[in-house]
Amino acid sequence: MTATLLDGKAVAQQIRDELTSRVANVKKKLGRPPALAIVLVGDDPASEVYVRNKLKTAEDAGMGVHLERLPGATTLADVLSVVERFNHDARFDGILVQSPLPKTLGKDAEQQVFDLIDPAKDVDGFSPISAGRVVQNREGFAPCTPAGVIELLVRAKIQTEGKHAVVIGRSDIVGKPMAALLLHKNATVTICHSRTRDLPAMAREGDILVAAIGRAAFVTPEFVKPGAVVIDVGINSVTKLEDAQRIFARYPDRLEVFRKRGSVLVGDVHPDVAATAGALTPVPGGVGPLTIAMLMANTVRAAELRSR
Amino acid sequence: MTATLLDGKAVAQQIRDELTSRVANVKKKLGRPPALAIVLVGDDPASEVYVRNKLKTAEDAGMGVHLERLPGATTLADVLSVVERFNHDARFDGILVQSPLPKTLGKDAEQQVFDLIDPAKDVDGFSPISAGRVVQNREGFAPCTPAGVIELLVRAKIQTEGKHAVVIGRSDIVGKPMAALLLHKNATVTICHSRTRDLPAMAREGDILVAAIGRAAFVTPEFVKPGAVVIDVGINSVTKLEDAQRIFARYPDRLEVFRKRGSVLVGDVHPDVAATAGALTPVPGGVGPLTIAMLMANTVRAAELRSR
Image (cartoon, rainbow over all chains, first blue to last red; front, side, top):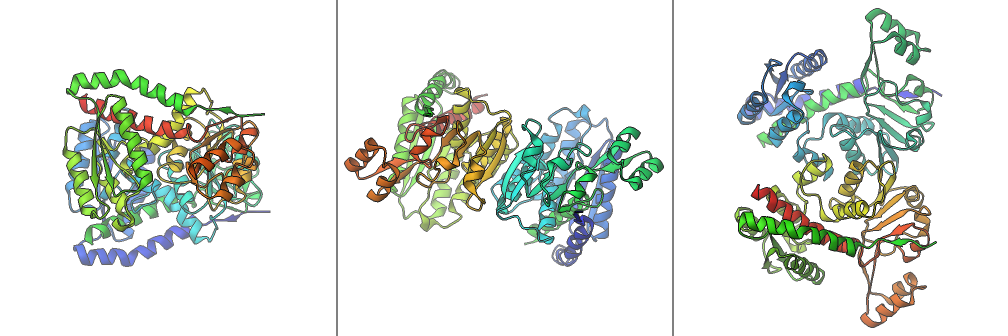
């Protein structure tokens, strides 16, 4: 038995295609396309890649983008004042501050920044008011990753009603909003985490299993009910040869990638799960592209609400 | 085997006793005790009882209270303008609009009213920003019923970490915040509801089972793992003789109450569960008094935050 691969890339393309006419409508009404302002502090290489992808996707969709770069030595007050300025700048419909912020800004820095973003421009959905609207099942901006997972499930016609969905991970940006969104799709929802007893057995109860823990290949076949739908939210870079050899022992093409590049991507789900699951999102090409597509969708929605 | 009764009334008393010195401190700082403004629209008899209890408890705690009554024929605009006035009235630390509002005010009325309450005075915790703070595990006002359940579990020294907690019910004011609070206490949490398949089997997985569905005696022994901690959030009035006879067949003292008063209270949990559960909250005298105690605690907390 081999799992159907759920093609997140294709669904993301579909979502972006559907935005085209909406982008044009906003342009007619506002005299400019929907526009996203991104704040990038410091020079974390992974963040550089993520931001570049977001900028390119927005440009390809005919949307406006503005990148505000701040040096790593910036103060929190500087970051907050940029956000405040963008809150009041009518040229921007959405504001995204790329996470993580440099550790030197302090432990609460991200939350302070997210709290300050105008809820009407909070296209990342990280502010408490956005989190509250998600949990209350109301109009608002859901965090892009769990929102993208729901789009994938709906478009792949995977039934959620009455199904048991198990979410591993309880972060504010994936695990908890994922649970709320699945609940509102009438799934019975269980949230597991590091303190869960006998995690494999609990995970194995899931008709739908979402792995969002950020640990390479953590979810092995013993976590998976045969035939389950497995959604792999993790994107982990494997940089040690022994890890690559252990995880990809039976996948010479992936080992080949490691040999060429010195690293290889793997999700939170072990590749062997493909033999147990009924359907599975690949990494890369699964949840990642959906996250960016939903950022675009949220930004277009923000512009539509402004132009009403 | 007979369940230990978890005495919510005693714990509520303990919580209120602990507030005494905090009330005195606020009085010193603000020149007045913590004060709660309650808005009651119409003359729903159950609401009258609830409001009376809240007023009395607040007065007994030496707190300030103000009851604003509006006739059932009031418009939504009137209710909103009262809330707006109380938001700006420095004499009040907390605002509570008694639910349910008359149906004539429209379907969205409650949400519009809760949305307008200043988050700093939202002692019922029903606004989206309060809901978001709860789900993000941050300082704020959690809805009083689930917050009271957590207080009960903690004070009864019932371990939550690593335990499987099953919540039946997914309301914004009990089920969903209950799940978030249990999650933050390191329980593995499952939320079940009307669409859950084989609800008794799912419920039977719970080391801790919270019933919050509003259906008289719905949770029968087949829902309960032997030895589980069962929290009964429901308060249902049984007014038909045949219902009373069915539910309380083996409880002549409860049937006697029915015969005297023409009605008898029962939770969402069937009384027979006492023979299966390890611990159980009674109805009345379980979760009900805790809810009111937490309303007082939230109001004192709101006053403390103002006086900082």
